[in-house]
Image 1: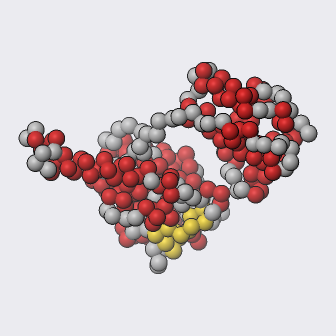
Image 2 (image 1 turned 90 degrees about the vertical axis):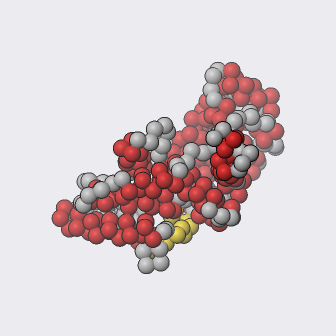
Length: 302
């Protein structure tokens, strides 16, 4: 069986059985094509040395370690599939250690900046009211940008203050939203209804967040909206919907929420993914100590 057929079957398996997104499928295919070009041997003939050579070659070629780690993860998944199908006797990729990569702490906003950001959109009409509701929801719920873009009207339960999100692998979860976010969503629903009635727009009927043409707001458009208001506020550096997701998690942890609850709300499949926020919390505590304790670094300088 040729690599073309094996890769096609593997991608179909990921799509149908694992619910992998189209974007991820494209990345998997590119990684596998790259490996086959480097090592065209039959899958059963591929050994750990071949895979280690591929990984080293990519790093020596200037690719980031994080990118190479992703390629190794792709190979591990692919050869595991081949093992399950009886095509190879062992998953050789599983024996290859991933290159060590630095783990930068996620970016997040201060409480003041987060409050100012969600309050920046002003005015009446669909666009400013929508943008206010969008920012409030991102900060209040910690939803991924793809989850927000995919929301439908039926996913919003304002009476209970809940939102149904569809996360990675099409897994659904229920996420609470705060009172201010719920109020902003109510205002937007009114503007949305008036807009639909005025435009008689048929497109995007089920979509919750609409663009100015009446269609569904896309991931990219949501990112542009977040950046737009951050720049208006004077926030510099990298910022986007994911920044608000990190901000949501960090503020919950600093406020005393337990990791399991945060894991559930963020939709993380593993608690280890959520644990990175403990480092942020420690940084916050150290900052408070430095400012408040008589022997703290900043206090001693005053």
